[in-house]
Amino acid sequence: MLFYNKIKGAVKNFQIVRYLGPAFVVSVAYIDPGNFATNIKGGSAFNYSLIWVILWSNIMAIFLQVISAKLGIATGYTLPQMCSKVFSRELNWFLWAIAEMAAIATTLAEFLGGALGLYLLFNIPLVYAGLLTGAITFLITYAKRYGQRILEIIISSLVGVICVAYGIELFVASPDWIQVGVHTFIPALENNDALLIAVGMLGATVMPHVIFLHSELVQCRNKDKSYEYKKRHLLMEKIDVVLAMNIAFIVNAAMVVVSAAVFYSRGIRVDTIEQAHKSLEPLMGPLSSVAFAVALLASGLSSSAVGTMAGEVVMDGFVGVKIPLFLRRLITMVPAMVIIGLNVNPMKALVVSQVILSFALPAAVIPLLLITGKKDIMGQFVNGLYTKLFGWFVASVIISLNCLLLLDVFMGIG
Image 1 (cartoon, rainbow, N blue to C red):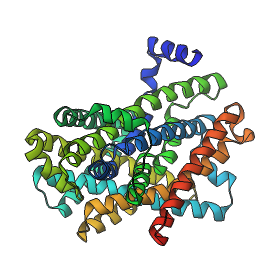
Image 2: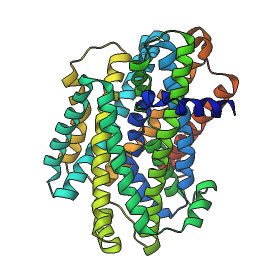
Image 3: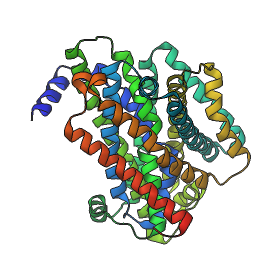
């Protein structure tokens, strides 16, 4: 009740408006093209049965993003910077390597999504569409030179486009809402293939690179060093996170619901994004297929920019290696261009990239929990007992799912 009253007061006094933004930038990573791939595949293969994965992934994501923001607000440093202060140089090189792998994997998904969106809308060949995606990404990230607020507005606008597009999809698809409700709250895994998609959904929903990034995005509003200001700042950021992440949850759930209602109900197993796009028009009309392509393009462009920013934070923080900005952005973009050039099936590349992200998650989550559990670093913002317990529960769930997936992939059991 006390927290509710604080939120009510913040909204009433319009304080929250000045603080909204960082979580909306972060939320883009939770509705990126990797989500399209895993959610469409999950819905077409397993009906509504995996919606619960998105719900629980979103709860974990809200928790982790709040903790990351709290670290940034309490210390005035990013998570990678704090890792460089707390852990050994050897461990930081290891964490940096994993974080870079995650940044490259997510940029792969995002570039592929942007390129596919341009291809589906304008029939631009994938290679040229990829180059155009890169150019637009540079322009979006360049906007940060004129203030983070400008960047927040651009990316929030793209999130709005995705929401409208999938609102249209939901309206046209007419899903079975009773089944949607049941499978949102009742966990089920039909077989080992469902496990792979579930872990991919987890990797697509809880993103390691934005756990690093969020601690940096709060810094532009972190001007006052007093405890009272930081306490109010953290409250505002919690509201920001809850709003943004629940919008991301609705969009992700909508992806699964539309795929189940349109494809699974007709016995269509979708293996490529192009197939999903082509199938929508004869089944639901041209408006639906255009909305899908627009959503994919907006997702690819916005998340490419966010992934590039996260890669910069990772490079700057862990090992203190100073690389020119242009080169930093190029490093995370090149692998995606190689994949596009090799003509690899984009849907498979997207799903695999999300599984890689799921394996990279512990390298972000564990350092975050260790550092925010230290009173000498966090002061009055140190994690309490229940926060610590839930945090380690989240870490154990992620690690356990990854171990099950390893057993399934390499030993044929799980």
